[in-house]
Length: 241
Image 1 (cartoon, helix red, strand yellow):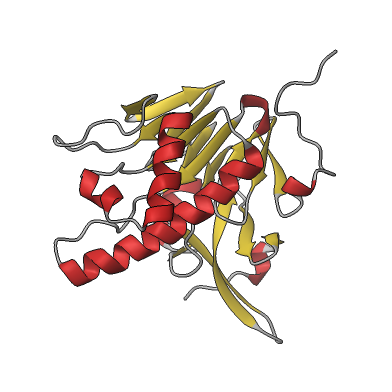
Image 2 (cartoon, rainbow, N blue to C red):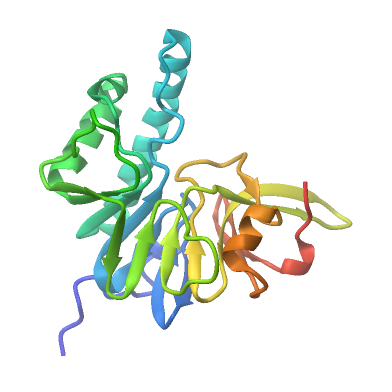
C-alpha cells in the first residue's frame, strides 16, 4: 500500500527537532517554533501569528513590523520543512493590509507567496473591516478536522479533541542547578494548547488559574520550546512565577 503524502518518518532530518505526541489516538508533531504539524492531514497549525502587530503609533508600528518580519521568516522555514496541504492560523488575521506592507521586502514577499500558494484557514475573531487574506483563504470561529475542533481560544471546562491557542502558555522550571522559563505546549491527552508562534520569551505560566479552568484536575503533559528541539518537562519541576 502506498504511503500517504505526509507519512511521518522519524529518521527524516526535517523532523529531528520535533517531538512526536499522541492526542486522542492521533499523532502530531510539536515544532520548536511553536507550530503543530498533523502528518496524516497535512495540516500545519500556528497560534497568534499576528498577535501584537497592530499599533497606530509609528515607532511601535515599526518595532512590531520588525518582529512580524522575524515571524514570517521563521514561518517560511517551517513551511519549507513540512510542505503542508493546509495552514490553520489560530487568532486574528491581518486587520489592515498596511500590516503586510510594513513588513520588510523579503518577509513581505515570502508571506504573500505563502498566502497565495496554500489553503489558509483563519480561525478566530474577525473585525468588520477584515477580509480573508490569501487566494484560497477562509475565516471561521472554529474549524473541525477529523473529529478535532480547532479554536483560537480554548473552550472553558473539560472537552476532548480540541486544539487551541490564545493563552500563550509558558513553563517555569527550577532545580538546584538552574532555572529557566520558556513558552511551551501543554496537553492532557485530550486537548492541546499551543504557544504563540515564534515567541521565545514571555507568556502565561501554566500553573496560573486560567489553565486550571481548561485542564481541571487532569494530569498535564508539558513540552518546552528549546533552541535545538522540544523538550518534555516533568510536572514536579514546574514552579509558579
